[in-house]
Length: 275
Image (cartoon, rainbow, N blue to C red):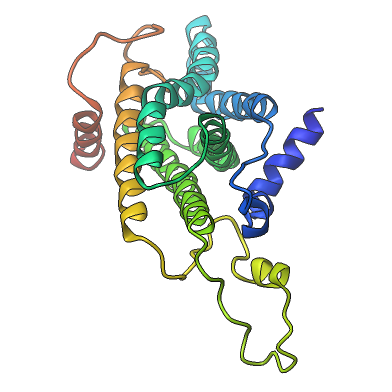
């Protein structure tokens, strides 16, 4: 079953599950349960990579690897997938309302499937960047650098995942509004290109932009939700910290509530470049 779910995630990332021909019926057929398990496993993988800094750093000390370092790595593996699902829990109602506002007839179940697919894309990208995080954990002892590196990795994966969501919602709105498909290519001398060929030629991947004329209202509304999701996600990561583990502080599942995510990023930049 796991292999089947991974293959389905691969189809989503390649765009096979979000082509116009598949979305025309207004339904999104994706296995939420199976995808959720894959998302959790991918989150655990990246969480272990994040927490590896604590283990690698203490391994070079006279005391060697400590229990606190191992606890930090395991805690990160638990909290990373929790971060994404809690963010989804907070922002899902607003996505469904925004979806209704632009005239989409997607059901709540279809919206849930779509957003789990978005998490799959995001976590797949994030987990693929995990080895890079481990490499830098092995080659640097700078805690501020490791924090900023993980922020950069999360930003890259988040942008790609949310771009997938916006593109797919865009296509769904156009399909349901029965917007005309683009005409056959100029070099098509026979003039008998099938609708399926048109569907498959309009986008080569899940992230391709479709330049058909469509409602700017829908795109604008979804972009507003993307901003809301990003803000909630960043602050949720601050609430659930630590993920990397400060070398100057004992292990703790959660830190005391103070300041906010963006303040800490600015502080880390100052520590990294200010010496």
